[in-house]
Image (cartoon, rainbow, N blue to C red; front, side):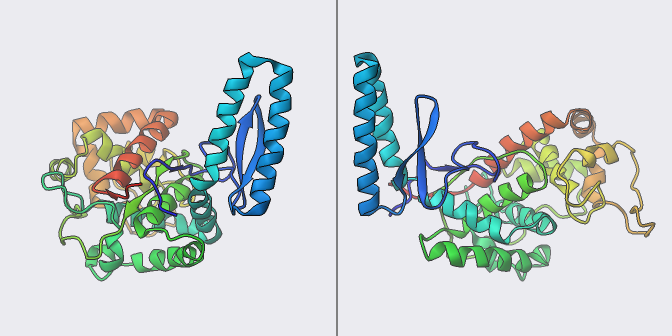
Length: 322
């Protein structure tokens, strides 16, 4: 089956947001406001039998309901019949990632997203979300990412037995799942990315020693505004950087930054909380304005992070065509 570029995957395992509640073996459609099973995603004779049975039931309801509802319901049913040929990849990717992902592993997986997509250069459209990170793990800036790649490799092996998934799609989905798993926003992820067969150019990721002006310049070369740079930096709220709980995605990052000075870790160790780039944001008035907004309004942070994450994982992506 060829994957088109119109399918989306929701990041939450517990809601019906987009198609996240579809099981691996069954697709679902809506009829008269109720969620009903339509056709087995596995296809085959049982799917056809179920479809004929559903159609017979549908025609009976249409007869009782009158001609005004008949056209609408038949159109809905036709759409539902097509769902199995679109959604199996979505379900499999989501279920596969959830089998290997934990809250402790979430920060590493999210970092993997930034380091794959962060090579994008808007001037020549090079780099971006293309799975090239698997060829770049030996670079100093990618130290430790091989662990996250191995984790996702286990998911990919299982998914590929049913339907091939690109590294770019898998990483994008895994990052969204990591955010949701730690209590962050649900993020729909468009599928259909193609993988690069070579590494992206080196030296494209912002260095950890940059000041605010240099950071703003670096992010602008990737097509991101100052506000988007700040909201993406909020991902440091999880992991071992010392902002709040390492496994809870919230707005603690911004609240800590408002204290205006680097803090020692809660364990009393001398290691500074966060990176130099985190604290450099507080030295810029434009950045500081957004830090205050997100420190006061977690819902706004979640909304803006979701939108910017989608932009990030679409940056530089090469898409399959139907």
